[in-house]
Length: 170
Image 1: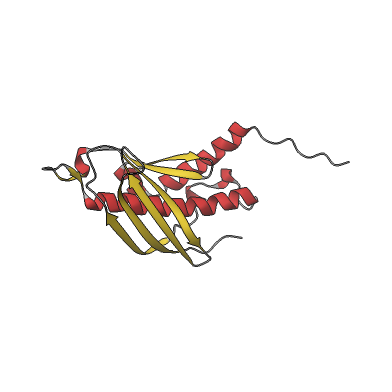
Image 2: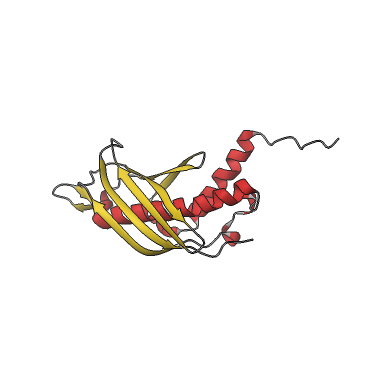
């Protein structure tokens, strides 16, 4: 009779996955420059752009700068796309989450095009975004992102992007 190995405690697995996400995010200095953070619940990511005065584009309104909004949405899309690939590899066992470090970080997808719809002014407060991968193949991916502030049903921006996928390992 063959005994199965005892499963690892959930907290150990969770910590390894959180560390893999942290390493992925830290691998992009621009994310740190903007101060974007990610909250992971299972395989679902929520990006957060904490409010800072230097993100205001129009001080008379005041409103978030459109470039900061677009950058936030694009970062959310790229990290979601990269994370979904990493998650798939970790779940299938082809990638050990502990091996995801700066030296072994998979290359990020490259933006082909990215279209932002500014639905209303971004207010001077924290912003949140969630991306959904519509299609991800070997060479191409399509992602939709929605951003809100106080109420998820009142989006202030949304975007659709198409990305060139890096070659997969294994």
